[in-house]
Amino acid sequence: MEYSMLYPKVTETRRCVSMDGMWKFKLDGESEGEKKNWGNGIPGDEVIPVPASFQDFYTEKDIREFAGDMWYETEFFVPGEWEGKEISIRFGAATHRALVYVNGREVTKHEGGFLPFAADVTEHVEYNGYNKLVVKVNNELTVTNIPCGETVVLSNGKKMAKPYFDFFNYSGLQRSVYLLALPKESVYDIDLTYEIVGEDARVNYDVKTTGGHPVFVELFDASGEKAAQGEGKSGSLEVKNAHLWQVRNAYLYRLVVKIKDGEACVDSYEQEIGIRTVEVSGENILLNGKPVYLKGFGKHEDSDIVGRGFDINVMKRDFELMKWIGANSFRTAHYPYSEEIYQMADREGFLVIDEVAAVGLFASLMNFMEASTGKQTAFFEKETTPELLKAHLKALEELITRDKNHPCVIAWSLLNEPETTNEAAVPYFKEVFETARDLDPQKRPRTFALVMNSVPEKCKCYSFSDIIALNRYYGWYVKGGYEICDAKEMFVKELEGWKALNLNKPFIFSEYGADTMASEHKLPSVMWSQEYQKEYLDMTHEVFDSYGFIKGEQIWNFADFQTTEGILRVNGNKKGVFTRQRQPKDAAYLLKERWEKLPLDYKGNQA
Image 1: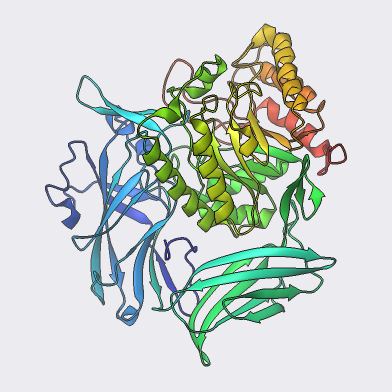
Image 2: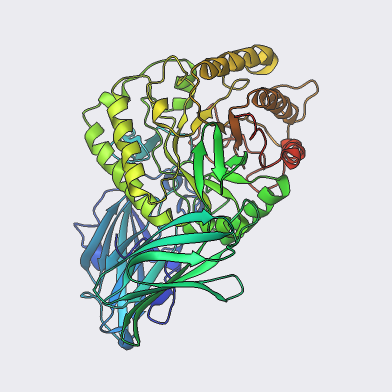
């Protein structure tokens, strides 16, 4: 992990070459590639773009639903002047597991589909020549890794992924790949914490390097003027008249870290940082000591053709729509997003709840429906749970190491809709929450999204959360349509139960919503019509506004997205406020009117 979590950048000592483009590609339904030595090169001449999900380029359903091994191949040139440096290949992600070969030799493997990893190829490349990179990716789902699911074999012999979650199993090389050249002695990690002292600030840093030469740190303001400097691998920078990073008013400094040998620069790395503090105090979420009310979305990385592949154009459109509608936050449901999205949130001043890919930890293929029945399960009593926990903790370490210095990240979401009504969940949650606290230098709030049956009288795990995050669908999965009056009554009854506990913690709604077909208008309203989505939101917001401890609302979902096909899904999940093509439904205007009126510190004086 030493060479994979710092975002690739070109500096005076580092070189970074994008390997994105058209790669050779071949599906391997019989898993014969290793036996046939495809690590030396794959047969055929099919090509595919990287980064992208592979599924939606093709017209054959067997390809779209493919589960198993797939192989990628490309060539790369290593300049002769790079000799003497550490040469590595960094993958933004490979979903869900990867085996990497360079010039026919295995160089690394990685499990987990949404976080970076790197292969040190220094001893395996030819300089001043072309080299061959081959990657075997596998997208099968299991109960021993996150996100959870299973892979079955159909009567025709084809494998099929069965997710325990409600989004399509897009996969492949979905994020950028870089060829890196670093000095032999380099910076590989940076920890930052902040203190605000009146008009000034203190930036505490801890730099990790691969050697023993001295470290020098400089901080530059947005105009390029030096704001502070320090020496040593650990220390503090005193920043006079500090500009704080604020919601929708971001101010970024540039932190430059150098390793020096006398006057010579051994290594140099820099990143943008925002000076801000985040904490929970009583029923308030505080940014820079002041209460904030979250307005925004649960999202997905999901768009036409490229699937979950990172698309800078879609990212730009999404942020413009979030600004237009008056949002200030989003949750990275249900996995860590591409790094560029956090960088954009840093620049635009959006608050991010950063979620690890721990979804589907519930003994049901469609857990949100199972949970609405109140049925209890025993997911964490499986004999495979220790293996799952190990994978979960590894992904959590990778997530926090990657994202800990983003000012936009204000909380960690450690699980989405897990089973919590059985005592077996308690030690699992304890380990996960304590690990997150230990890993994060800034000690951000921790949360998880509670599924419908995780109600006060049944949930065994809510006490672990610093912020109570509820996924609730009263009026949709429970008492929808003409029964919405009863849904409201049930909703209020549950909230009264939470209120009676006197937890003295902030609550947010991390999901609420109703499926809506953009083409459907109906008067009087019926479920799936645009009129009903607005009716549902009016009822839900009325309940939100009735409780002072509710400090945020993130509607599900920002945009329509793809799921596994089935009778509950009309070509995907249609709860989006925007269509999959990023055009507004009527509910977008309702939310825009509401959110533009709500002050940032809404209900901040009610705690």
